[in-house]
Each structure stands twice: as structure tokens, then as C-alpha cells.
Length: 192
Image (cartoon, rainbow, N blue to C red; front, side, top):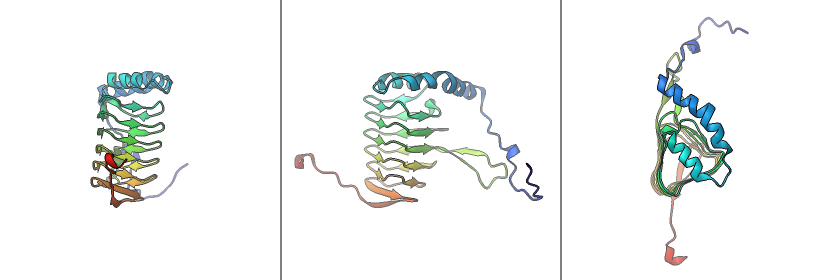
């Protein structure tokens, strides 16, 4: 089927991301050999999954939980600090670095996406920018985080929010687009 429009401004036939041979090989090994086995590891075997991710180049701290159905595009672009929990059905489209700091929870169906397209360029090329999630944060179910976003320490991002810009420390944030709602107050341990 042809769309015979004489004045196309976008030429997707020229939109080809060039990957070096090493990246192609790593992606192939991960996608077709290691990842299918990784996904077969039963739910309570997070340590084995973490060992496999480390073997593929991920930097992962101690006491982390990475559940069985976490989808990771490129483990070698993943930096996870100590005591991080990542739930099932999280998707990490990490064309470049995703950093998740300590004591952070990433809930189910969260999508961290480091890739986008330069929509101003006629070839619509892929562009990659990192994502950082600060320590002591919680990304609730269904959150989408866009490229080049830093979520500050202690942030709570409400369910189904779309985060397209940086969020300040110790805030409760929500919405599409995500915005700061209020300060996050932590109850003192003595009061519990």
C-alpha cells in the first residue's frame, strides 16, 4: 500500500540506529540465549537472577530483590544500589544507564525508558538519555519515566503517573504530566 503524498518531511528509510559489533553481540547473547533462561528461574530465586545480570555487566548491590518477570533490555546499562526491590512486569528500556539508588521500590508495571526519537530530524533517529531514581523512593504501579529524568531522593511517584521532568527530593508526586503534590513526611520510629 502506498501513501502518495508528494511532500513527506520524514524519511524513515534513513532512520537506522547503528550499533557497534560488541553491542550487537551482547544484545544477541542476552536476548536469545541468557534472557530466556533467566526468565525460567522460579520466583524466589532472586540471587540467581542477580548473579546472571551481574555476569551480563549489571552493577547490583546487596540485599536486592529482582522478580522473575522484570524485562531488562541491556543489563550492562543497569546500576542498582543496595536494598532495592523491583516487582514483576517492570520494563527497563535501558539503551543507556538506569541508576536506582538504595532503599527504593519499583512497583509492578513501571516503565523506565531511556530512549526516544529526535522528532525534529527528518530521519527520526533514536536518542538515548539516562534515568536516575534517588534513594528511599517509591515508584507506584504503572509509572512511566521518560529519558533524561532524575527522581529526587525520597520521592513517591503515584500510580500511573507520567514523569517527563525532574522531581525534587522528599515530595509526593502524581499525574499526567507528573507534578509535585506535597511534601513527603516520614513518621519518626519512636512514634511507631
